Image: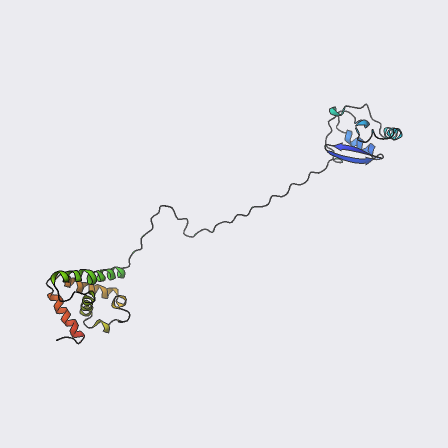
Length: 214
């Protein structure tokens, strides 16, 4: 026959021969000895077997179950299930920019025009806009922008500009900053003469450089 001993919510079943040793350990730390009637299954035993258990386990007077407070015992204690290990959460870090975070509201710096770019803009303004406008206002001999560019270029180089620059590339793309500055000086000289006399003189020389003079 086997009898059940309950610790908290777990019942352990032991044989009659092992019952005395187990009861002795359970009774340690109790206010009163554990009564056999409190052992599960004892009441269902036949009277001879109940007597056999009493002979094996002499116990004192029974104590009410509600008054007995047993301490957990190693022989009857069941180890709780281990909690699952937490799953590590992987976070992806964004790569740091070498330039650092861009602050909101920070005005972007405008691109600084190169010195040559400024000269190109000034040269085109003179030959495409200001000189043609002055020629139309005063009735000069030339009025088209490419004619002013021819006169200005030939005057600066002292020959047909094709001889100094690559015609396929174009004069503006082929000139250096110093050459652009020289052509601007010639155009401003024409601009300072509203009568057009300087233009007529320089135009005649330009045509001679090209074999078209009188």
